[in-house]
Amino acid sequence: MERVNLIPDDVALTWGDRVLAFVDRRFVQVLAVTVATSGFLLTGFAIRQDLLRKTYAKQTSRLEAKRATFLAELENTKAYLAQLDQVEQQLNQQMQWVMQRIAYLSSYRATQGEWAAILQEIKRAIPYGVWLTELESSGEGQLRIAGGAFEDRLVTQFMGQLKENPRFTNVAFSFAKTANIGKQAIVAFELTCQITAATMAAS
Image 1 (tube, rainbow, N blue to C red):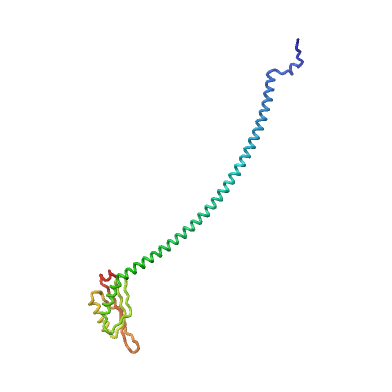
Image 2 (image 1 turned 60 degrees about the vertical axis):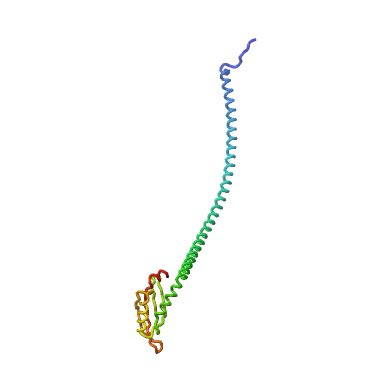
């Protein structure tokens, strides 16, 4: 049995050509599948990215809401702390005032007996015809005495009796002036003296 090749020699495919044609057809198929798969993957990736973006947007919105709430609470806390500072300052001022009052009352209680004794000594030194209108004491123990008398000699006598009393030192004359009360002539005067160191320390 003989086989006759009816395909011309210039048209006949060799084995190698057949292999190449098969490979080319498979390549096209693989390429098409690859493109289709890539498109599917890209579409899925885009969908996933969109879902992630929406998720992140929701989370960002919640975080912004929490941040706004936190800032509002922080401002409220600052206002509350400012009020507490004002209350603390007021309490400190009141405490200082109370402590000053306590110190004053303690000092007054401790020295009221001493001042009573000083006033008693001044009363003993006042001669008949002299009266006092004002007594003023400074923190340094300086005492100012103002009053009136019927005669100048009575003022001089009052000063002399103060000088003889050891409770008073540096007795000095400030001024004296004559005035009239109705038809009665009087002498208005002012003296200064220093309370002794022991008395001043106690006061």
